[in-house]
Length: 465
Image 1 (cartoon, rainbow, N blue to C red):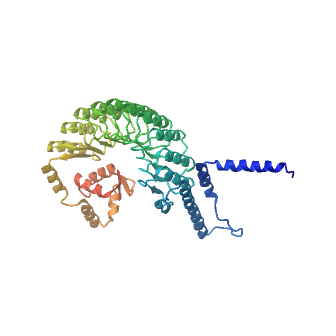
Image 2: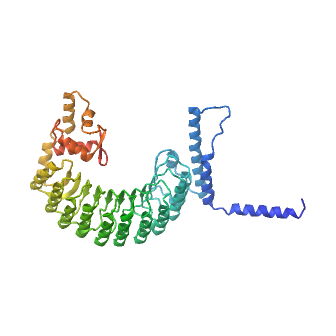
Image 3: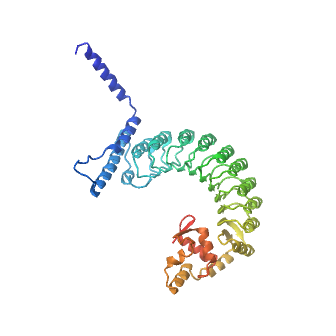
């Protein structure tokens, strides 16, 4: 080789080293994360089959690799490793709420999760993750198809965070179906971005946007989105700033929505005009099953408007109207609307701040006769309440059922299974209540049934035997 060629070789080497040095820490970290799963113990050629010990050893090697990757990421971004994360890296749910991760701590977590196949739920509420933390999580979600639930509430993400999340949601590329974005200082501009993304997103099924700052313009944008969205099944918009205009616009979109089942609108300002629009939703929508409009300044006039929708609704199971200025007159309108609807499937009407008299309970008995699955929560004067409780709880319901089971020499669980048409080990609360009240083996009143449901209700809306 000539001497003239040597400087050229040195110059080429210098350029190569410069290019490597210019790589960002992000690229290095994510590159390492992607390489991690390929590191396996080499299997001797003489082995034809895996033993249990070898499978265990492989899994241990994989997990150890992830832990080392996380520790290396922490070292590079200069943060203290979270011991809880290391201990629970193989568990399906990871709760890192209130850990003070910050954007860099979040980045280290994201790097480790790129190749993680165990964690399906990640809680990162109140961690000051900021824009940089959200970017790291989104990059991770482009590679990780195992993570299904993500909570990044109370991180003050604001408009910049909303933009990153919206861009990600528009791509419909991850397995994420449950997303919590509560308390992130989202205003109308953020609503516009999120609604644009959700108009075409079909993967997110459960979304929490509570404790934000959406007002009437936000209600209009959300209404337009709900009119065309075909993915959302549960939406929490409680503790925002919707008033009459926003409420009416929101309800306009709900009338034609075909997927949303659960909607929380509590702690807003619907008023009676908003209640009128919601009553129209009850009349036209054939999908909603749970609606919460507690504390929305709805009075008897609004209750009257809601009742018109309840007269023909065939899908609503739970309606919460707690902490609204409704009197017994408004409560009567609501329960009579349910009574007049033979196809009503209402299981719970919550008007528990409304003080009623014995006259109301007599009317309610007639409603219960037509709809035994229904439970109305209300307030009573102390004398009436105490008297009813004393009568109904003289004999505990479980003791009554146990006596019946002993007498007929059957197992306790067999009695409960006999209430289910398919003899399942669990039932929806409404079906269970109806079956108990209609069976004639162990006579019980509604208060005893209510007491029994409290004991057996394992998850909201289901009793487990």
